[in-house]
Length: 371
Ligand code: AOF
Ligand code: ZN
Image (cartoon, rainbow, N blue to C red; front, side, top):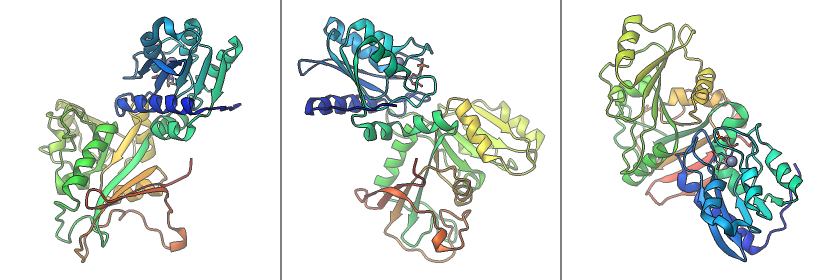
């Protein structure tokens, strides 16, 4: 893909605005991307818009409608290449052409194989000047979920955990309420609001009986997914209660009791996905099935066994660790009991790190592999 970005400070200002618009829909567009669009003429914004929800009009359509006739001879700033295909909505490249814009500034090309360069090519073919690559890094970051899912068929997986400074997620008696501060726990609800699926192992359900809902005033409950090879989940577990607005999926195997599986399937809002394996749920297959269902991101919230296995299988993209300034010692569980690296030289090194201490805990964010 040919990239060019002869940008000026207005270009950056308008693209920044388009990015700010795009992230307003964070957590609401899956499986589609976050996209913002600004239409500017004579250094003034004359129209703007962003994509609100999959299946509804794209960002460019909102911005063009907002600009009306003023779009003629204007410049459009789009955080993602305009689409060229007929999907659930018609191609935005054609809408930009019809509106008569004379220049299009695109932050990044679309990794969707249905588009990937064709939108840009179509605009250039008509004679529209297209500059690609302005704030590309920022644009890729806001769409890390979309990029992973559309290019691999696997969801973007984030492992969130809270541990004491001496690396325990609970005391040796199993007590874990609470490791992290009130502020950190509040932030976790923002994560639950952002990602499609919240994942936990049956051990976590048996020990902590969490509800795994989002308790923000205008938040939305993620789909709760429990990996439970032997179907040990108690039938009165909080995750099975239909008070949450999203379904609860239990992934199990041939080791599950048929009677219990039947009873769980009858509960409203509960789905049991039974895999053809003897004891262990095939995790990569399960993750693929989530994307097939349109769920492209996963927040893994425990426990350490499941997290270790998923990291070993290279299924985790990002980690968010809250490290509380507390010490408990003893034999309490660790956040990655399922990972058994023997030599420090083989340790998984994280990159693109962020450190934050606003909540009173040390909050470390990092990525597991370079994309
Ligand atoms: C969006 N919103 O603002 C842009 C998108 O199913 P469709 O027809 O909505 O097409 C979705 C694809 O369109 C999406 O995967 C991406 O490649 C492209 N651009 N999508 O939902 C937008 N600009
Ligand atoms: Zn489009």
